[in-house]
Structures are given as structure tokens and as C-alpha cells.
Length: 155
Image (cartoon, rainbow, N blue to C red; front, side, top):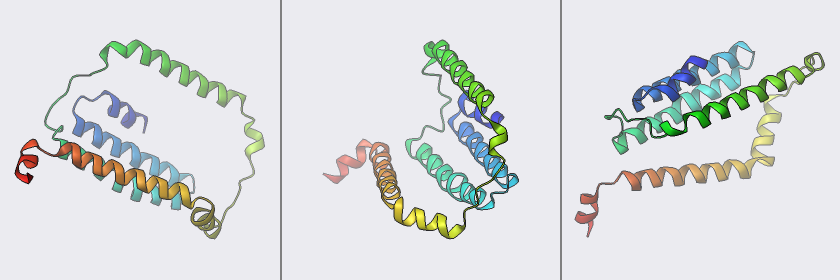
């Protein structure tokens, strides 16, 4: 998974980065399955590996950015990115060291009914807002992918 994540941010070809992102999503689903959470693993495969990856590949194809091997646009900010990455890594290590891992031995068991009840009652509004934002992003990508000659023919 770490290799896939590194490939996403280091590869210059956009299509190759998208495939590496799919490898990363698949690895995460495998981790969920190994940790004993098959429902979350299945959701990861269906939502991220399936839908989100296809959406990203369609966006790449619609904007025709898949043909070009683009140069890195932020090459002057590499040192700032390294400092930020080291700081985040330090925070993660500090959090892992400071956590009382022996206190987390008891697992909380939630039934599927309780999860579904929470999603469709308490958290229904955030899911609707997210669906609206995804719809707006899709409409915006279609608008940006239009060719100017299509606008001239419509007038």
C-alpha cells in the first residue's frame, strides 16, 4: 500500500498514477479483510476501487490529460513538501508512542442494523450533502471538458 501511494505521487504519467491509486485502494481493502472487517473491505472495493477509480479515469479521459507526460508543476516547493511530510510523520510516530495500546484490547462490536440505523437517521444529511457535492463536481468536469467548437455549434 505504501508503494502504491508513493507511486501515485511520484509517477509523471497521469494514467499510471491512477492505476497506482487503484493498487493502493485494493491493498487497503485487503488490510480491512485481514483485520476481520469484511463489510468495510467490500465497501472499499465497491466504492473506492470501483466507483471512485472509474470516476477519476473518466475525468482523465474527458480532459484528455492522459496522453501527456506532464512535468511536475510544484518542483520549487519540494523542500516545503519534505518538511511537511517529516512533520506529519513525526506527529504520527509521537501519537503511536503516546497511545496506551494495552487499554485498547476490548473491541467494540456493532451490528449491521445499528450501523445502518445510524447512517440513515443520524448521518443522513452529511451523505446527502456529499452526494450533492459529487454531482456538482461531475457537472463541473463535464463543463470544463467541453470543446469550444461545441459551444459555437449550439449558438
